[in-house]
Image 1 (tube, rainbow, N blue to C red):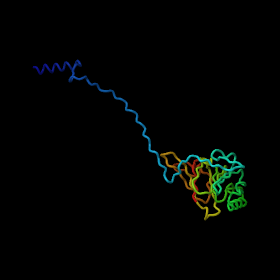
Image 2 (cartoon, rainbow, N blue to C red):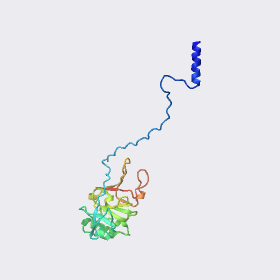
Image 3 (cartoon, rainbow, N blue to C red):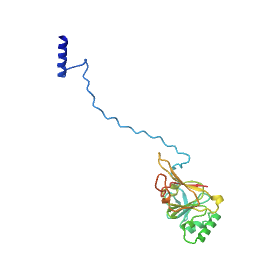
Image 4 (cartoon, rainbow, N blue to C red):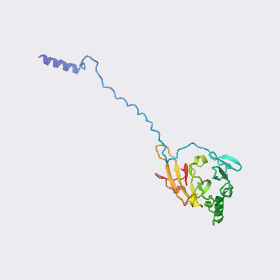
Length: 231
């Protein structure tokens, strides 16, 4: 009968909520707490690869124009054509005639360029591109401001006030054994995206970079950061 009485007592205690197990306090289920927000992990810095042009800071190119020095990275100050000379300096001009007759140009370049301009059956802006030079135009159809390169290497267009402004390119070679080569367009992208590139293989011209396909879609118009001449 003791067993029955004990069972009855336990049942009574449970019904009144007074049942205690052990001598410690009663444990209550904890309310769920929000997990702490995830902290952003810093991505490792990308190392530039050997074939990518490093995004160098702007190094302004100083050119001679109308008897004074101008900073091309800041402003062309009204000039329409700027040409790289054999010694590395730059001259800028108002007209095509001035650019083609510059005595600082190599004699062979002047002769071939002027001859092409005279023989042109119709007015064609390509005829005003200096021979053996890569001519970069701010507008389609070889119009607008023109930047002329001859030397080999990568040209950071920001140095010349021409970044993201290239719309057409022309190159004609008068002395093929010496000056034949290709060029490459670069669009510098922020990590983790790779820099985009596109080769230009002469002969011929690229009258509208809107017609030149861009990797992943779109076109190359007003996207070029670095122009590379490859002799």
